[in-house]
Amino acid sequence: MKKIEAIIKPFKLDEVKDALHEIGLQGLTVIEAKGFGRQKGHTELYRGAEYVVDFLPKVKVEVICSDDMLDRAVEAIQAAARTGRIGDGKIFVSDVLEVIRIRTGERGEDAV
Image (spheres, rainbow, N blue to C red):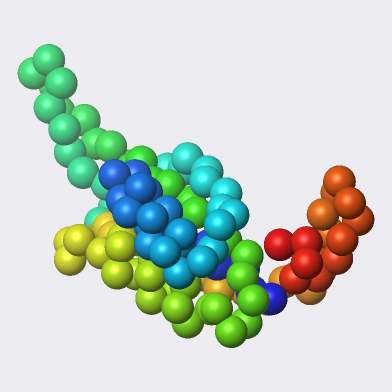
C-alpha cells in the first residue's frame, strides 16, 4: 500500500476530491496548511502599508491506496490540481507498512 500526500491550492480541493472519487478512491484526509516553496510568499498592501505574506494558504490531501492504484491516483491529483502557475504544489508518495481499522480490527487493504 502507498500513502499519497498532496499539497495543493485550496480552491482545487473539490476538483481533486472528485477526480479521486472517479477512479474509485473513496477515503481521504484534508488538512489546512500554510507554507511556501520557490514562490517565497508575496507582498500585499493593507491600509497603505506594505507587508510580506511568507506563508501562503495550502491544503494537504492524504490518501491511502493499493500499489496498483498508485499511478492512476497520482495522475488524477496532478491533472485536477494543475493550474500551470507557480505554487501548484507537490505530491509525495511513501510506503504504508500496516493499516488497522479501529472499529473492527481489520488489517491491510481490507481496512482501507
